[in-house]
Each structure stands twice: as structure tokens, then as C-alpha cells.
Image (cartoon, rainbow, N blue to C red; front, side):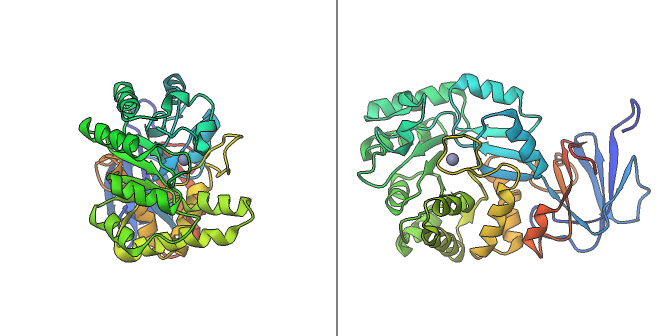
Amino acid sequence: MADGGPRMTTIANTAVFDGHDLLPGRYDVRVDGATIATVAPAGVAEPVGPVIDAAGATLLPGLIDGHVHFLQPDDFTALLDGGVTSAADMATWPPEHLAVLRSQSRGVTFRTSGAPLIGPSGPHSHMPGLTEAVISSPAAARREVAARVAQGVDYLKLVLEAEGRGGPDRDSARAAVEAAHDAGLRVVAHASAVGAIELAVELGVDILTHAPLDGTVSPPTVARIVAKGLVVIPTLIMMRTTAARRGMLAAYDSSRRFVADLHDAGATIVAGTDANSAPGAPATVPHRTGLHDELALLVDAGLSPVEALRSATAVAARLFAWDDRGSVRPGARADLLLVDGDPTARIGDITAVRAVWLAGEATTAP
Ligand SMILES: [Zn+2]
């Protein structure tokens, strides 16, 4: 870092995955302050500022995790260590805690749903401090949506269960979706059972998260997901961890099959982990390694490594309306991840983190 001068760095002789594809050849990528200045063929221009020799490595956009939970500052440190520079929080309450997290986020930017909307007796109703989030009538649903809108959330999180499993009743859930849409908010439905996924699709939610452990989602429902343009954040690592923890790993086949069918049908899939550090959570997925594992599971379910990487970069950035990131191109925010090897050929190489930059600042020693 030059004393008092412009903060420039050149990442030299690197392969580049630009958020969409692996670019042919090697590049010198110049970072100027918080922004990517140039992406030029290697060796053409004189390097500027400190030069990081990235031979044998691949530069990617900083990863985006489409489903996380935050409890403490260490969660953000762990994300950064794994190369995750942006994230979508899928349930934080109360609002005061959100303000504390924002002040502790170490520069990781995140979108949030605030507190989720839940049913009267489902598994989520036992979480402390969530009694106000229970919607047991359409009027309560509208009131809770209005409260989230006033709080300034980025989307609504609606926890749906299969019929008779304690989730919001159909009329209340429908009222929540309609009120959110009237307010210009998209609805993310937690749906981890076949019945819940069918209900979510019928209600017209915008984003599905999780995947079933209890059976196969029917081909007509998969077709409706594609036709309606729903985005799916399957959190395979959470489903697999949950199944293993219950001693029924075979149930994970349902989750994997859902993603395989979605992929075959051309659905939009975004990578997300459900990473959390809450002691009482049904299963723990670590913030540092969760997204690496998710990418490997997406590839195992049929995505190509490039498709999996897109789902954690450009496609995720588009979903969460971050048009300044998710790609390596001049003018983009310099949230960057440098890994040894080539994750577009071997997805496991994403774990070989060499350096991470957040708005042009190295968070780990390159
Ligand atoms: Zn979650």
C-alpha cells in the first residue's frame, strides 16, 4: 500500500473466472482502491503497485452465500477466511441485534429478512423471541409484513411446513405473500418437505430455500418452478448434515434428486449453506467451509463446476440485486478470491484459498 498515494495492487499472471466462465489465457488484474481497474492479458502493461504473483492460481469474484445466519463477529471472520464476501441473512431478530451485527460485520455486506414469519406450532415456533412472528390469521400476517417493511428488510422470509405440521395456515400464508408483493418485497419460502414446496409454489413465492428429505418433488411441480421463474437455494450441505445427524443419510437422496431434476429442467439455482453457529440449531454448518461443501454437493447433483461457481457469484449477485459485484470486470467492486488450482475444472480447488480482498483490501496475506 503506497504511503498516502492511491491504493493499487496488481494480481499478475492469473487465470480468471469472471463470474460466468473461465476466460482463456492469463491476466494481470489491477485493483485501484475499492474497484477493479483493468483485466488485461498478462505481461502487456507495466504492473502498478505491489504485484502478487498468481501463477498457478485462479481469481474469482468474492463468493456470495445465498443463505446464512449470523450470531457473532466470528461468523463474519469465518466467511471471509473461506472467500465469502457477501451473504444473504435468512432470519435475524430482534432488529436491535441486526444493528449490532452490521457494526461487527468486518466489511462483509449482507441482505436480510429480519425475523421470519412462522406458524403457530412448527419447529421454528420454539425459537426464543419469535412469538411475534407467528401468523395465525391473515390480519396477523399483514401486520407482521408491515412491521418488516417498516424495518427496511430486503425480502420476506416465510417458514412453510407440510400440511398439518404446524406451519402457517394457507390463508395466512397467502395473505403474507400478497402483502409482501404489494409492498414490493420478494418472498423467500423455507420449504424442506415436499408438501411445503408444493404449497410455496401454489402461493406464488419468489424464492424457495432448502430441499426435501421426505420424498420426491413431482415433475409437474418442478416444471411449475421453472415456468414461474422461481429461484431455488437448496442448501444441500444443511440437508445432508441434518440427514446424517438424524442417522438417516439415505434421506439426502431426495434433496440431491430435487436439485438434479431442477437442473435438468433449467431452473435457476443459487448456492447457499444455512451456515449458523447457534448452539440450539438442528444442525451446524460452519461459515468458513460451508459454501465450499455446498459447491461440491451441487456438482455432485449434476451442475458443472462452472455452473456451481456461477450460482455463488454472478447468479447470486443478480438475485440479491448487487449489480456492483459477482464478476471480475473493470468497474466492479474488488471483492476477490484467489485460489490455487482451477475450480472450474475441479470444484474442490475452491478450498485452496490463497487470498481474499474485500473492496480492494486484502483480508488475508496474499
Ligand atoms: Zn436458515
